[in-house]
Length: 104
Image 1 (spheres, one colour):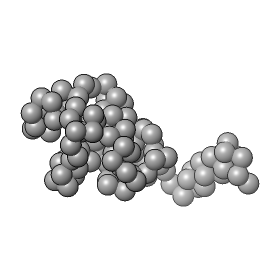
Image 2 (cartoon, helix red, strand yellow):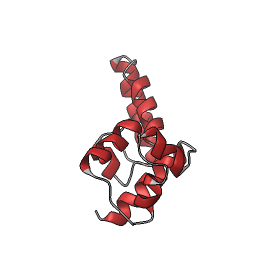
Image 3 (cartoon, rainbow, N blue to C red):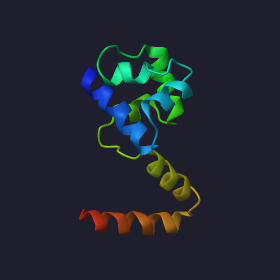
C-alpha cells in the first residue's frame, strides 16, 4: 500500500457517506482543511488520526486496507442480519451465494 491508496480510500469512504472533506475534518475534530490536505497529498494522517478515521467509518484498519471492500456499511449490515439466522438458514444462504457467484 502506498500514500495514494490511503488518500483514495479516505475519499471513497467519505463519498459513500455523501460528505465533504470539510465536514469530515470537523467530525474528526480537526481544522476545516485537514482532510483536504491529506487527500491532496500535502500531508499524511498520523496513526492517531488514522485510527480516528477508521473509528468514524466503523471499520477496522484491516478493512481500511482491503481494496475489495467498497461499501463497508452495507457489508456490516448484511453480516449483522446473517448473525440472526439459524444454522439451516445460514446453510441455505451460503449455498445460494455460492451459486450466485458461480462457485460450486
